[in-house]
Amino acid sequence: MTTLQVVRRFLLAILAIGMAGTAVELLLLKHDEGLTQLIPLVLMGLGLVTIAWHAVRPGSVSARAVRGVMLAFVTAGVAGIYLHYRANVEFQLETDPSLRGGPLLWKVLEAKVPPALAPGVMVQLGLLGFAYTYRYKER
Image (cartoon, rainbow, N blue to C red; front, side, top):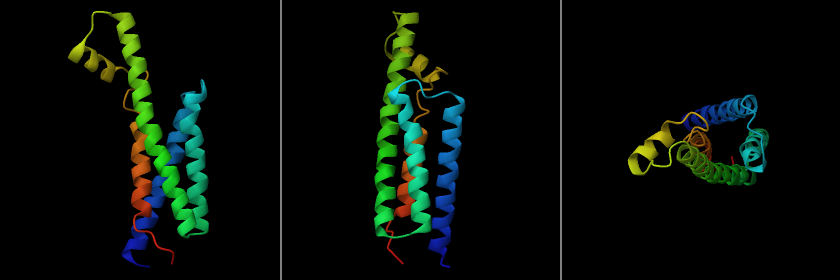
């Protein structure tokens, strides 16, 4: 087994553990109140199925499928950061309508519910998946 193959296996394992752990955390947090909150859960399930398919039947088609799902992860992560940020802005402005500029930004970023940057984990997992499939060629 080459060094590249070993690194790819580690990346795949880290990706699977990250997806499974994030899915469990979202379920424990009851992140299922509405369609937009279900998106990361659905993507975690789809991602696990896709990487399992690729692990069992490696090939260019399954590698492209992994890349497609990873693109969805990155897109959902960016959208999630925006949605969490907007929810925090609305809450902070309800609490203190005089907040503006830097003080509002810091209040929003420091808020615990919803954590503004938590969806960044979707971006991270997506980039990890891209790293896994980087220059992938069928054996």
